[in-house]
Image (tube, rainbow, N blue to C red; front, side, top):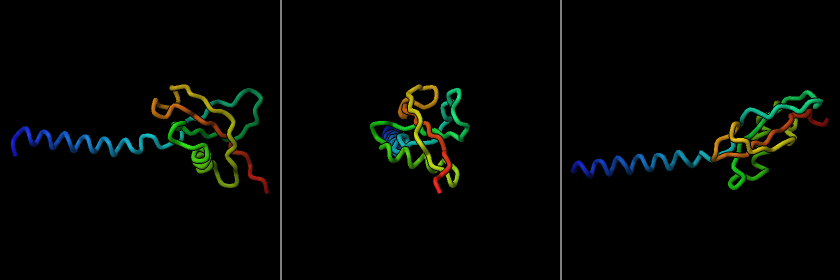
Length: 103
C-alpha cells in the first residue's frame, strides 16, 4: 500500500469512529439541577440535559424517573437553556422534583 493510501485509510477509520461516537452525543443525560426557588418545598431535584429536536418529552421524563429514588415520582418544575449547565448539542435542561409517590 502506498503512503498516500495508508493515510487515506487512517483518515477513513478516524472519520467512521468519530461518526459512530457522535451517535450517542445527542442522548439525554443527568446534570446538576437548577436551584430551588426560595420557599419551595425541600425535595430531591434531578435535571436532564437534552436536545429538543431529537428527544421527546416522554424520554426526558423517563430519564428523570430513573434518576429519582424508589417510591418517588419525577415531576417537572422548570426548563432552561443556559449553556453553563448543558452543552451546545443538548442545550435544554429540564429540572424535576422527586416527589413521594401516592400510595
